Image 1: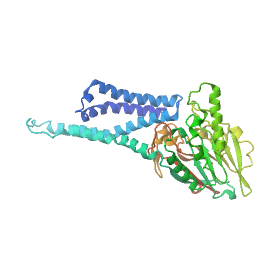
Image 2 (image 1 turned 45 degrees about the horizontal axis):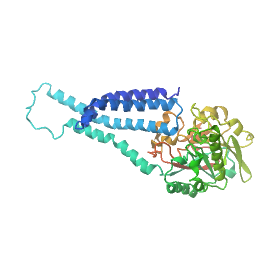
Image 3 (image 1 turned 45 degrees about the vertical axis):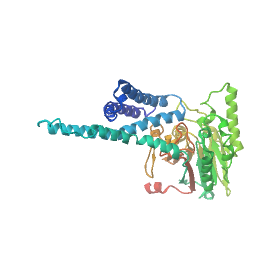
Image 4 (image 1 turned 90 degrees about the vertical axis):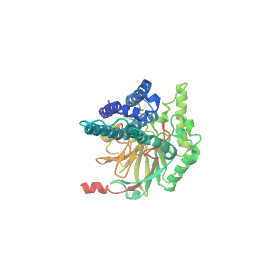
Length: 423
């Protein structure tokens, strides 16, 4: 059972209790809409809430694609936000009613023939609350239209105490989770590629999920991503979607051919696909190691084909080892406990749920209830991981807060100043 299950259970319980309180206010706000006063409205309201709650648990405990899980969790948390925004208006109305009741408790009732407001105060407050609660829906529309191709270049400094001097200051680019089968605007996608190339990184990592399921999804985009080149090479790895496990195949041979064609696509683009192996990157007579494994996810629904024991072979003499592994859960499950010689792991997979908040010193997304490492830098001891929130999208065709990412790292041959200050 995932360690986040108690948190999810608590959230779902609070949501159900809030629903019991909110539905009355919604009826008042929609008083002039006859359907809102009928039993069928109550049934629809509760069924919708329960469907998303059940969907949350299905997405956690069963083998489902990230796109479906993202859609379920996005819908669930958008409903929560809408209800949270609506809640203060109901509370305000209840407090108003309580104040009036206390004021009139020992007074005679006012004459009944006095004119009242054009719209009852309760109805006004509930309508205002419903308007406030609809803000997340407006956000979905905005994110769909504007966020999905709003590529952002993030500059990061990667501190490596054992980095050879010849590598000090060179740059590494990372993109992840292209998901070419989701694209619908090739010109916009090309704009992101141009942004990456404009940075002129010395070498580039792609950390998995080139397609949604089928290698044919890359036919229209192979020429575009073939432009992604760097002086010291482009190195790539596989993600869970690259195996074709989320599509139906007439035979096992057809599935295998799809996989072989996807591997050929990496080669055709000039990308060095690392499947449980390594490369020695040489600059000025000095070397570091680039390791790449197939997908390995700690959750049972994801493939466990990564072989770190093979990828690490013959690298003992290298002072720095950089690992490409698609799923960030691999870091805590295998890298940290068994491979202390791996300095940094580069991952993707989470998409930041394509929904959340990212600021300089704060970030939040529903995906953090599933993945402990889900966006940006994390460190434990001398080892680090960076999780890229993705270049493409899956499921929900948009991004809210978690914009598509192009990461540029500057390698520095020194310890992180923050760590030095703590020493």
